[in-house]
Image 1 (cartoon, helix red, strand yellow):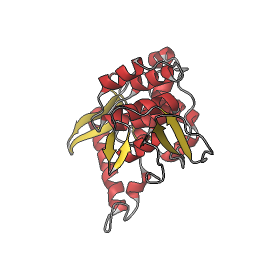
Image 2 (cartoon, rainbow, N blue to C red; image 1 turned 30 degrees about the vertical axis):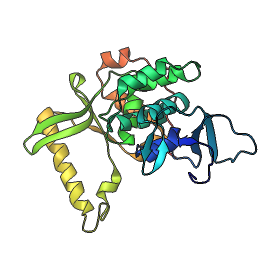
Image 3 (cartoon, rainbow, N blue to C red; image 1 turned 180 degrees about the vertical axis):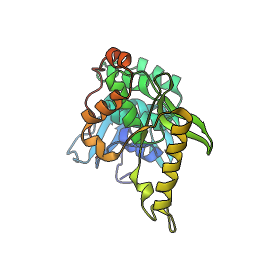
Image 4 (tube, one colour; image 1 turned 90 degrees about the vertical axis):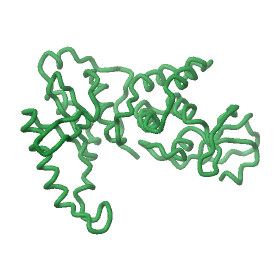
Length: 258
C-alpha cells in the first residue's frame, strides 16, 4: 500500500494505531491516510484519505505514521468513544504526552467530534492492560459510577495480587476473565490450562480471605448483553451509591468487538 501511493502521505487514524502497536476494539479493512490535499479521480473503497499532512510525523517499521499524539486525537475525533478509549489507554502505556494531545484538541478549528474527543481524553487511563479492561471501565463510567482504581494491589498470604478495577471505599472489585488462559497450550507448548485454573482459584480465595469480598467477573461473551453486565456490576454497590449513580449520556451502548 505504502509503495502504491505516489503522493506524499502518512498513515493515520486506526491504521496508524495498528502500526504503532496499539490495541483496537474493532479492526477494519479500511486503510487511513493523511495527504496534503484531496486527491482527484476514482477512490478505492478500502482507502480513507484525510486532508492535512502533518508537519512532523513518526516512522515505525519504515512506514510514515502520524505521531502518537496525533493518532490518538484523530481516533478520538472520529471513532465511537469506546473504540477511541481503547486506543488512548494503550497509547498512555507507550509514552503518550497527555498535555500535547489536549493542546492539539484545543487547537482544532472545526467543532465536529471535539466534544466526543474531550470525553475520551477525560476517561483515558494507562492502567488498563487490555481492551477488555477498558471495556469494563467504560461500562462502569456509562453507569455514572465513581472512577475505579486500576491494578489495585491486594496483599494476601500468597503474595500481592492486582485487581483490574477496584472501588476500595465501596469494597467492590471487578475483573475481566480471559478464558484463553485456561486452555492447554494457549501460551506455548507445555502450557497447562488446568493448572492455570487451579492457580486462579487459589488467587481468588486468597483475595477473598484478605478483603472479605470476591471480585465480580466478566468474560468476552458478556459483551453481547451490556445491560446484564451493568446490572451485575451495579448490584455490588451499596444502595446510596446506586441511588446517586447517573448514566453518562455521552457514552453510547457499547458494541462487541469486531
